[in-house]
Length: 342
Image 1 (cartoon, helix red, strand yellow):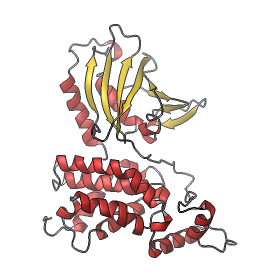
Image 2: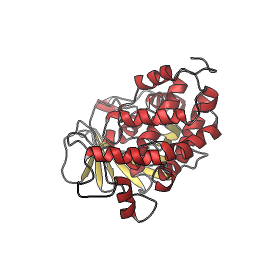
Image 3: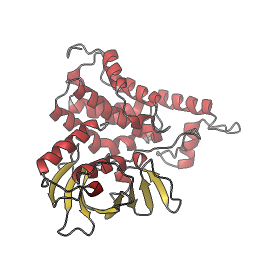
Image 4: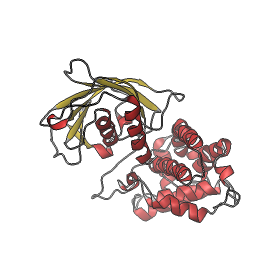
């Protein structure tokens, strides 16, 4: 796969080989959307696509914010899947050593910074091409989303309902046996401090988190920060809902979510703290204080511990034998970051 003549078929084969699990967790994210996104993404660069084109920020911005919203036949509620596809694509370039780590991080930051603009553009009827409108109308007619007595095509009908250029799309047909998972529009990231309750002297960790993490990943981060073994069940309490381990039975008292399907950004931008309970026997209780939302210049792509004090008690009565080691913790967090989908 040379830089001058890019083999798109081989590149897409590598792209499809290690698709993250998030792509199969709900009807909002499906392979057809991924394939359409990448097909039109490549078209935006012209007939002879090279790595140099794909990794030039101005070229990328044009395709991301102009060409795709105009031409990509994807409904607005599916557009988050297109963002996920592009993140994974640039991860694939990095994995294949076609993109340096520094350039990969630059593109992740660019994707995060422009994600809101992209999603807004994907909802603007006024920029859609005639071909895109025709394809979306045909999709809806085939799926019976429009009743037989409606005389307007789907896109025109939704435009008249919305009363503006922003179309109020209903959800597509969702299989009853699938759980819906929507990735939010992520802020850049968060600075948090995690305190172990009732610890004397205080035991705490301060860290920076990317915006696009699930609570399941945050659980793994906490396990690393406090040198625990992930042998027990856990819960998060965020505002009016519980986020539980997939192995924990439903409680039925509050709004509940499964940690693998709940995103930090759904809560962290509006809450001051989130509570975490680990090991229902030992009852380790931690408070996660959201100290700030990171600016674009501060954003990180992997979890990063910046400070901490105290050695956490170990599980099952074990006695700690080493002091808190910030560098060692960050090496382990970096490994978690390598395993993230984006």
